[in-house]
Image 1 (cartoon, helix red, strand yellow):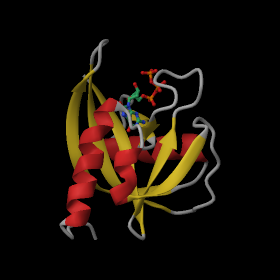
Image 2 (cartoon, protein in one colour; image 1 turned 180 degrees about the vertical axis):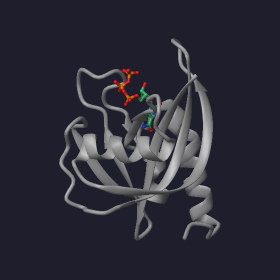
Image 3 (cartoon, helix red, strand yellow; image 1 turned 30 degrees about the horizontal axis):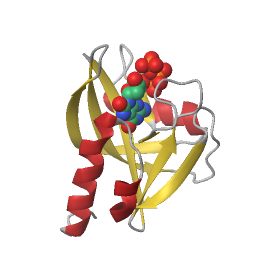
Image 4 (cartoon, protein in one colour; image 1 turned 90 degrees about the horizontal axis):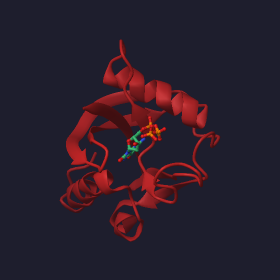
Length: 133
Ligand SMILES: Nc1nc2c([nH]c(=O)n2[C@H]2C[C@H](O)[C@@H](COP(=O)(O)OP(=O)(O)OP(=O)(O)O)O2)c(=O)[nH]1
């Protein structure tokens, strides 16, 4: 099963989502930026590499937020959401066609990738419960 690293960047009660571009699988769905882990890299290295590739900025992976296995038609992915810090906010979209800082309670109104529903619901409940630093 493939591990997929997904960045959870939080700033002032908002989280950063990016939209999959036309021509990609699941085009139009919003997701946490990141991607598949390659051989010989840790999941934190994977996250930092993917953010550099997708946004052309450095970031620091801080801690695992949650993990969730999701079965797509073709196979399953282990989505590993990682609390992370953007070291430069001037992101450039290299892969996605949009990005937005979304107030956490508003996540409900975005069409996120099916595997991400678990993460966005946990974010909402942790936010409401005052458990997000
Ligand atoms: N980056 C990212 N990928 C996600 C999320 N949720 C989710 O189901 N995915 C899926 C989409 C992709 O199948 C896979 C990530 O692969 P990737 O970003 O490295 O490469 P890709 O789009 O070319 O993927 P693929 O077409 O080869 O499957 O995980 C998410 O929140 N972030």
